[in-house]
Length: 325
Image (tube, rainbow, N blue to C red; front, top):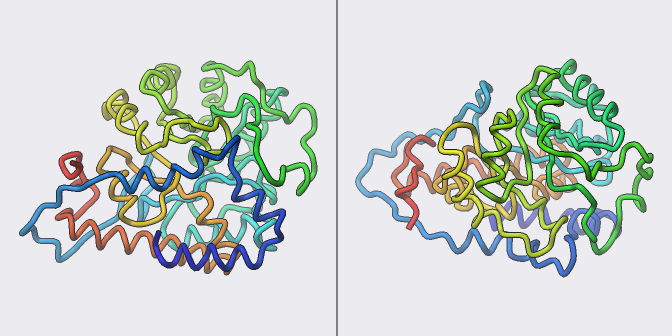
């Protein structure tokens, strides 16, 4: 783990209430998926190139038309108000300052209209009352979101140990609960708002193809931070199959256990176009607000640039599959 992320984690643990820390940190079931996440990235081995001119290394990229300084993005996580008084506003400011992109959660503490400080996407759940979901997506489009991230792996909430959301924030109204009957048709329903839709929670190649055929503009390989189905495949292991199935037709992003620039390099070499951070951003937010979020993202981006140079890659385009053993 990068030292900055370790320091943020320790500060956050000291500052957060035990209940808030447990809510953020906990996983589902026996928490096997949670504990396996980072170790899976550590199992990837690299084949660096030598005697390449790496005097200038760029981490810049473009996703769905948005130019970014880094492929390290802020993934959707709920209730940032538990970590810092400025909540998602501070997170958005930190992400923008680092040249990154925020994916704003449906379960955010702040109104979505109050949050945007830079490029951002909106994360959506399919609720039992579909009109609520569609209203949020239209509001996000009007407020400047450039894409929708549809979370597809929460037909029901996983059995999570530790604090529950209801213990920390207002309980959901009946119509706001996830709709277990939601199918691939929801991709088109959300796309009708005029924004590209990425589907998050994909761990299989056949699911990735089905989502693209139903109109998705991209997929996010994710097991929900180990908070849904325990023993779900680590994203490190699922990523190559999804990348092979998508075959360059759309962006593939990945999250889960990424804690260093080396982890990011491995994810990119395995075919991801970008990565998403969850808990590390929450720890950084709790440690030092927007400045903490910016510092966290810059630290991983600088770390990525260094290991790219060591691997003989001057740009993300040169981080290719032949770097992986």
